[in-house]
Length: 220
Image (cartoon, rainbow, N blue to C red):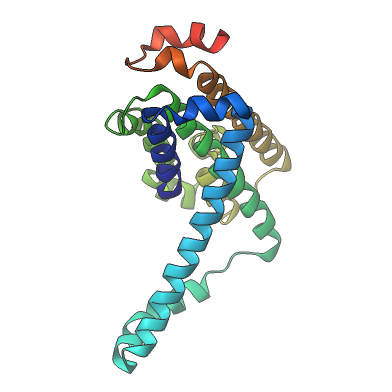
């Protein structure tokens, strides 16, 4: 969400400066959004890596006592038992989840005229994304009940919901395939919708778009 927040800020700033109109006249909106998603994704991974490395290094540099204080946390991370064969699948869910929410944030950026408006729309997507956390005990005790299964299929909650199920139970293959297909289609749909809204960006400039206007704007 932090990286997608940067994406949202970038899109809104380009709209406010009217730079987006120049960009979409020279490059397809879909390609522009895809490039932004890749760039901010790499930036986010690099940032997390730097923070983690700096945190460990400063703890070691500041003395044995400080390093000993964070050692239990590092040991907990080291003791997490995730089967190796699940790592590629979890990575795939992470990538698709990031791309999906980046596309949603792109939609938010396309219909927002300022950074004050953006978070108001974005909260619609960010709140459902963490729903599985609220049902952590259900996922841990009955991961194959209706609620965990539904949350692991619904695209907004699938990246976290399916990851939680995978580490506690054997998920049927058809559920994994269906979940991935729905998530992948949602990624394409979100990117397509965001690119369409970028294309009609001039129609949105200077006014707050209404939900009833969106279908006609998407059709161009």
